[in-house]
Length: 77
Image 1: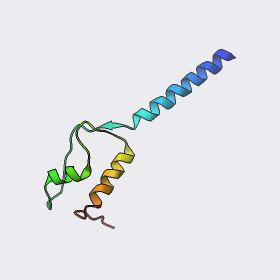
Image 2: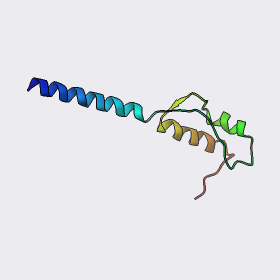
Image 3: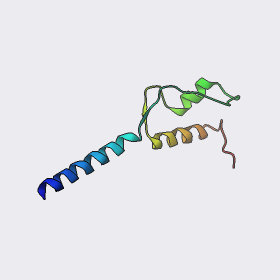
Image 4: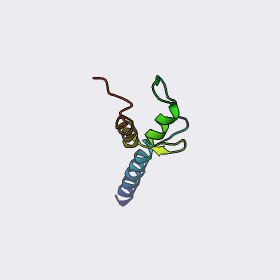
């Protein structure tokens, strides 16, 4: 019984550990598409991300908020 419980908790720990790191992405390139108003470099500077950064979904939400706060962009409704 103890062996089963220890295997179960080990499996649970490894499973949860893997889930935490699955959602992270390393930025390999930045591509700006459809922008005609300002330079691509300006968009990259206001996004506050760099190639090689390790981002999760919350970081991407912050990038969008940073870009909309510049008033160079607007959200279509």
